[in-house]
Length: 477
View 1 (cartoon, rainbow, N blue to C red):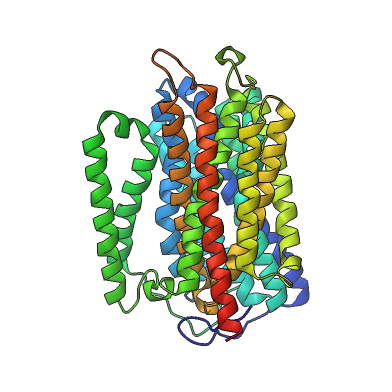
View 2: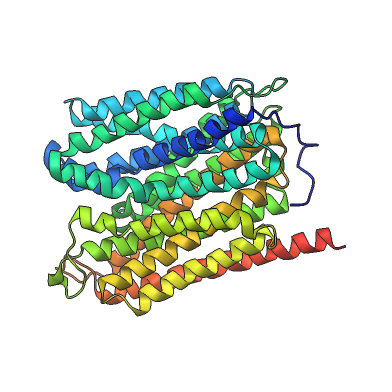
């Protein structure tokens, strides 16, 4: 990779011993996988939660939404803490919060306590960027690049790992047993971090911009709330539009605060760098498309035959559809570090976006057989894996080592918002395609949604190609 880091020369690495490095790499992978899988536990358990706690499906949906919200809010704060001298303490404290939240989901407590536990579990999503910071600081440069790429991929495919396991446990032992899996693996992650994560290099400081954190949290809460509450847009459009305006104003206020702060939560000036801004735009639009297709396939697989299409799969069997997504996503993540020695990261982003677009095209053209859904999910996984593995290289090429966690945490906030909007857009398109008095949308609504996804991936591809063109002009003046 070429280009100078924003904000000065990168600090020297502080590598750990070779024996410690062998333990560090799987530890970082395991922690990233656990926090992603645990945060996604709410997806297959929504119906079980509604039944067990005697709440509506809309209320049960918050077991997923609240985790995404708390993760989006915690990510930039943890990213800033990860840039300072107390990164190890921040990682251990965050995992302790996740373990405590996992315990709340298992104990026989009212529904409100379950939501509190899910919110605490969601905080762990902010650790992914910190894992990247540890890898960049304590591993040789070539090794750290490959590990960071895999951490990025693992944070995506964690959902594919957690979904079928949680669904199976819910069928066998109920919702508490499924959440018990989260308690066991998060406790293991905390022990792993305590044993394996080293201290941050000396000479760093990181003060959290409290005002910026509060304003950003409020804006993100509104954005993700509006993305998750689809009924608000259909029944109270004026209220939804008003809240959207408030969210935009808060984001503008936050940007002003960060520009004026001597210790910003996110270095907005660095984010404005063309490479970083372009990468975040590609992540945002690409995230919309990627999660849209994931939502479409899983929902289509569970639609009963009575709708005239679909396969009527149980939650567990539908979760198995995610296995090709996880497996091929991991394969792409392993291949990308080798390919990027010959192909620039922005071109890899563009190629991966094209692959995801191919997944949309496959789903739009052929979904009458379950094998075709598996194929589309595999194509999606391979594209998402390649995209996720290449993304850190684009951003970190112009970011100093000390700002790794902060820069990547902002990218993950952008990704979370994109995913939430992708899910919301899919829901809105399918709702619009549901006839009066019908429970399920017309089959053509899925085709319409797939075409929208192809458009999103086309924009992502063009953005990535523009990044590649700029990189080429900088390296070959």
